[in-house]
Image (cartoon, rainbow, N blue to C red):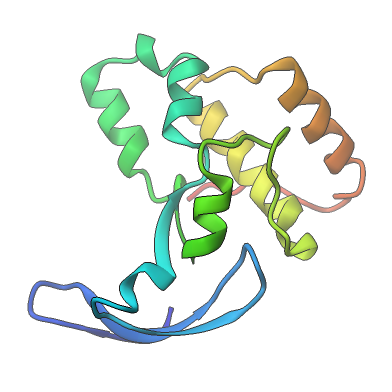
Length: 140
């Protein structure tokens, strides 16, 4: 977020977000009617992590996963709600130029926490990655 202003509790109270899922720019101001415009998404939905092995992780590992900066992304609230518990087989960002980065980030999270990929998810990821010639996995 650019020009982020923080309050005494270190919460963002305003700023400009170059939103990755939609490609929009969001001028954010914290408030009862505006805070939901920007939400923090778990790139791999927590329900998906649970279904793909997180239930076998220790409590400390699950907490690390849920709070890992690689797993968290500030996004458009509406897009986050549309994604809900979706994986790459059921939801991709409308911003097509971000899809390779999005899937690479999902793969990086699943690799870091040894989560598996469902067959439909694997097919969707493989199809998308055919167009991602220079995409590398993020480390953070």
